[in-house]
Length: 480
Image (cartoon, rainbow, N blue to C red; front, side, top):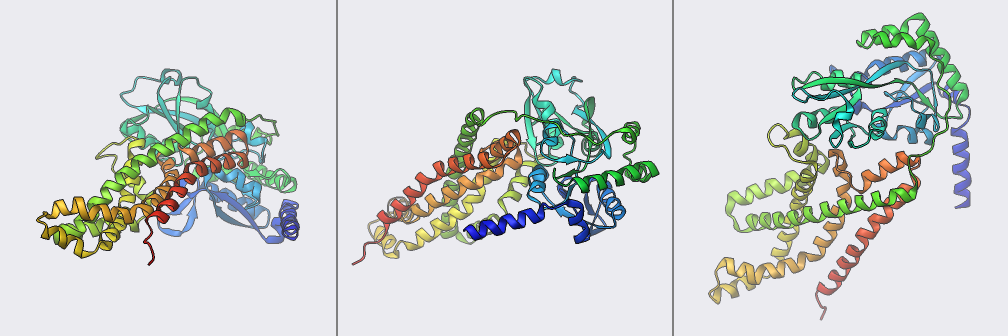
């Protein structure tokens, strides 16, 4: 273990060596972004999926070229760009990263390359033109963004955090939120083209800049020099114009100095976050319990249909089981919540329960099928000989024995469902894992929130694990 620590420390110190020397020796400038952010930042070319395009792709290429390097893109989730940068996974972040005092306390920023405005978007029939009119209302935005911080500072707003830029506007159209605040780039491309939405006001301004590790001062100077040259010789303006991004706000870029480093205090302490973690754990438990109830009843119906329902019902049951077992539950949640929104509008909480319940019903069906097959055929024959109907024999003889066999597996599935409930954060449900990521941003640390989250998951799942083992021992066949 001591040798491992020494090796890890040595690798870490090498990774954190002077940034400019590192990239020159490697020959590449590794920069990161999130393709999910979409057009016009960084996204796949519609005509060639192997090629990335976007105005930040062009800026990264220009910066690397001016440093005598080749740009190399690294895909990373937008909300964890800063922690991944600090880990040394890449050299530079270029992905619509707004300069905030909180981030300046963690990383170094290059000089800005784009100035933006925060745009408040509402439905056309909504009379409000100001954030103050939305008190008590649900307002959506991108998690860990400048807009998110801006909305948290307005008393009375119910801030709904999203992981993508298109989903908030879908929810706004469907009436699941009352407004959306995002950068004008995002609003103009994903919100305002929708006929039912309109821009109500500009509620803030900011700038995008590249982020580097604090110790990479030489690389920062080199990138700043390259950006300054791009600004002066017009290359930056050409790139922004090519992507229809140049406006009057961009004229200030030539005179903006490199953002300095500011101290910043976290918005809370560990003690103040404990009630939020407990609430997240309660949401996780409620969703899991209700989804498991749906899964148990649905799985039982599927298994009975497959065994006693005739060819048609058996085929349909088999298709259901293979469909829901063969596709990711995350995809199923997206389809249920966003894909079916024009047909049926479900709340996030309801969609979470239904989505997880329908997915786990397929797994429960296989458990019950095995349980039914484990009941000796002679049991059913004896029941028929006593004059019982098939329905009565199932209810009194077969099902009690089949469920007894399946019970330990059901307990194990409930534990798995408890952990899979973390996926419902993609449809805006703030459960335990989502609360952990929110708290990590607030506290500027992932270790303590991660440990708190792990402890609560363990507290929820450990009693179930003990119950499952006890059931397995109690229901195990007695050897002769």
